[in-house]
Image (cartoon, rainbow, N blue to C red; front, side, top):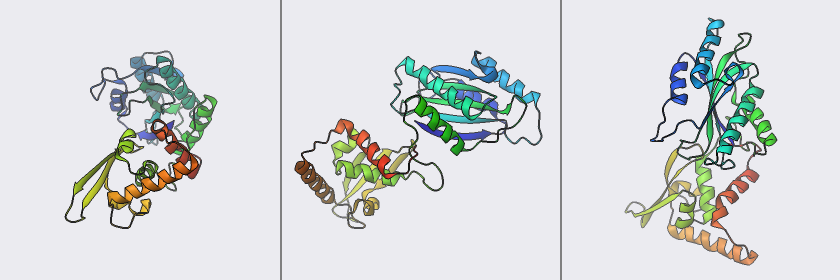
Length: 286
């Protein structure tokens, strides 16, 4: 479970409403699986919700209020099944609980969706920047939202965040990729099992061949990198990435596995990677 973002909306609330609650994108047939309301928007249709949010802002005009609203994204891991309607409801109810706990006395619209690239459940939230007394939001940072999300996740039997999302501990996709290469010993089939493509082509500049990797990182961004740029993180000689070095990694790991009589189950590889990363990172995660 992860908080993807919290962003302020200054004046274009209508555009965000149309994006979140409008027509589907990415060629999907269905945009919103469930739409929920919080505060004065509870038990209303999405059209009525947007009107309520607008009336609330108009009831408390302010020249000093910088933002009209905030948009949040709460993403869920495969702990929730995107094809199970009961889990759609659970995702919506958990998001509603997060919003009510983190931002009391505020109205909001929640949309449960699964039309992203991963196909996993996520929720969009449109949160008004006025409460019942017309006061603007004060606790509008990611850390506050993260703390509440952790609490609600544990309460509902989900894993809380385990990696910091701040300037002191940013997600490093290169380290993530290098770690997965180590876990698979650079085996192309094993890498493919976890969504990583390895390509090898002949090269005169870096004979005999150049190895490159491509994958979609934890933040949903497509990444491509030459293997030699990961050399130092893989303990391979600098500025080289010979496939033979990967085979040496595989041989060394095989010897260790044989010695300890341990079998590597590729179906559980993603889980093993996550567990190992959790043990080596500070206690909070995206």
